Length: 242
Length: 181
Length: 204
Image (tube, rainbow over all chains, first blue to last red):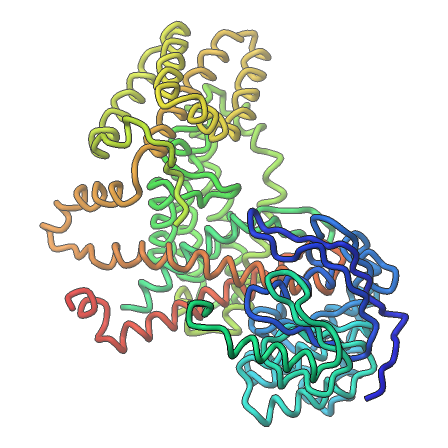
C-alpha cells in the first residue's frame, strides 16, 4: 500500500495532555497523522482509547490542541461529525435504535438531512453492502458480526474523512474478522486503528506504539511491532493487568 | 421467581442510573431529568406490585445513604426535607401506573401506558408531593401547587416518553413486560 | 461502593446505628413540635455545634450536602413574605435546615452495612411471621452491583450518540439502557437457576 497523505483529514496533535483525576492518560503528545492507514498499538491503559476519544472530539485535552483537517473537533461538533467517525468495541454499547434503518438514518439526520433523505441514504448504504433486506430488521435479530457491520455502516453513511477504530474485531470469529477487515481495507477514508493486537494492523502505513501515555515507537509497522512484541515478551507477571 | 427478583433489582438500579446520567433532551432542546421516567417505567413495565417493590427498594437504598437521587443526592436528609412527599409518592405512583397498565392489558400498549404514566406518574404523584410541601414548608394548597406548576410540562413529556419506551420494550421483549403478562 | 458516609473520622461513627436513628427520630419530632423561632434557632445552633466537633472540613462537607435545600429556604421565605408573615417563614426555614442537617449527620457518620443490619433487625417480626428476607438481601446486593454496570453502558451509549451528533443526547438512549437492564436481569436469573435457584444458592 503506497503511503498517501490525506490532507483533508490530517490530524494535528500538539502538546496534548489528558488527565482523569490524578491519572495522566496522555502526556504532552505531539503527532501529525496523515498516512492512509495508521495503527495505534499499546497495552490496556496505555492511553490509546483516550487518544481515540480525543480525536473523535468526545473529550477535550487538558493541555494542548488537537485538530482534524483544521477543525477543533471538540469545540466545533457540527464540523467534527463530518470529518471524523468512530467505531467502538461493542455494538451493543453503540447501537441506539431498535431497527437498522433508524440506526443508519440517525447520523444523516444529525448532518441536517430531512427524514426522507436520511431514509434514502440509509437504504443506499445497505445496498452498497448488499444488505437491502435489512432495512426493516430489528437489531435484536442480527448476529454479533452483523451488528458490527451495522455500526460500520452507520459511521460510513456520514462519509467522514477519518475513521477511528477502537478494537473493532472484539468477540468476532476468524472468518467474520477477515470479512470485516476486508471492508475496512477498501475504504477511501483515513483509518486510525487502535488495538492491542499486532495482527490487526499488518500492512498498515505507520504504527505508533503508546506506552503509559507517551510515544514509545513510531514508524514502519514491521519495525515498531518488532520492538513492541519484544517488550511484551519481556514483560513479566508483575506487569500483567491482574 | 428468580426473574421477578432480578427484574425488581435491575429496575431499581435503572431508576438510579436514569437520575445519574446527564440530562436527556427532546428534539426541541428541553433537557429533562429522566429519573421520574424511571419511576413510571417501573409501573408500566413491571406492573403494580413489582413496580412498587422496585421503587421501594430504590428508596430504601437512598435512605441507607446511597447517592442515587438525581444530582447524586441521598441519605436520610432527603426524607426530612420538603420533597419527602414526592418520595412517599414514588412507590404509590408506580403502583397506580402499574395497576392501570395491568387493567388495560387488552388495549394497545402505547395508549394504556400513556394513561398509566399520566395518572400514576403525575396525578397520583403530585397529591402526596404537594401535601408534603404544604406540611414541611407551611404553605397553603394554592402556594404549594403554584410552586410545583413549572414542573408539570416536563412531567407530561416524561409520561409520553415512558409510554413510548414501554411500547418499544413490549415489541422487543414481550416476555419481560410483566404488566401485560 | 460509593456511599454518603464521610471518611472524616468523628466520634459519632462509633455510636450504634440504632441509637443514632432513634435519637434522630426523637430530635426530629421535637423540632416539629416546638413552634418558636427561638427553639428553631437553638436547634440549628445545636446541629452546627455537632458538625463542628469533627472539624471545619466536616462542617464544609455538611454544608455542601445542604445545597439543594437553599432553593426551598428561599421559596419558604418568599411565600411567607408575600403573606406578610416573614417571621413564620424564617422559623420554618430554620426547622428545615436543622432537621435535614441532623438527618444528614446520621447518614454521614453511619456505615451502610450497619444500616442494613438495622433494617434486617427491624424486619425480624416479619421473619417470625414466615416472610423470607433472603431475597431482600440479595436484591440489595444486585442493585449495588448493577448500578455501575448500567452506568457504564449508559455512558458508552452517550458517547455513541455524541460521536454522530452535535446536539445534546436525546431521550432515545433510554431504550437501549432499559433493554440493558432487562437483559441483565434475565442473565442473572438464568445464572441463579443454573445454581439451583435463589433459596438454594443462599443456603449453600
